[in-house]
Image (cartoon, rainbow, N blue to C red):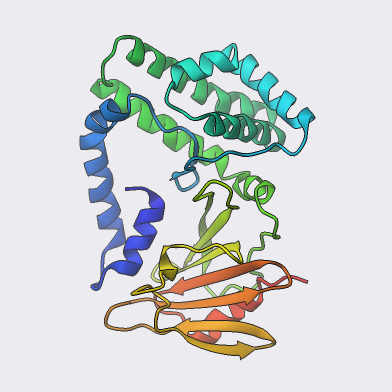
Length: 296
């Protein structure tokens, strides 16, 4: 179960959940099942925005310029010998995923210091060498390898936090905006993005906490949707629409089915929508946060 699913779980559970305990137990299960899962896939799904470890599914992306593509391909050759070597190490990755990884590494190089990028790229080199050996021997990772692969993934995420939103912006036609208004005591604790379907744009998530309560925002293109917006039985199925400052809002108060409150704002002139979910925040505070994400 990935971090995106953990956030969804907070919304879907009809009873209160100790999320720290839930995460601990979940990741313990992941460790127990790592051998079985990697044997089935025979390679790691490294095409991830590891800030929250969300998988990029079937992405086919244009670089927006041959010079960017050439730079990315050259970088891959420097790190892995050649693009072909990389594809041999991860034989079941699609061309789109390989293209994404090239672009991802180029963006990392542009946004990390030379020393940071050296350490970051070395993690991917070590990861690739480990999997090349495992695949050549046609086996699953042993316990030591599995532990190290998990450590590598965690270390990669610490670097990717530095440029996640810049990377997300390169795949979005709308401006990605953080809230300028945050209720007292809250601090940002996470940020991530994913491209959920081929041809779609970034879906950007920001998570905040004051140590006791939490809220999250999801910003996405106006004509895209996420799980919380299922037409039937979804979080906003019984939402109450209204207008405020010229914008359409939808508000879903807490209920017996949904422990959290949800609010959605549509910004047609900028081409995006924002969804905010919160466990204890008032309706008025939710409005302030969303209105602060409209921009100039």
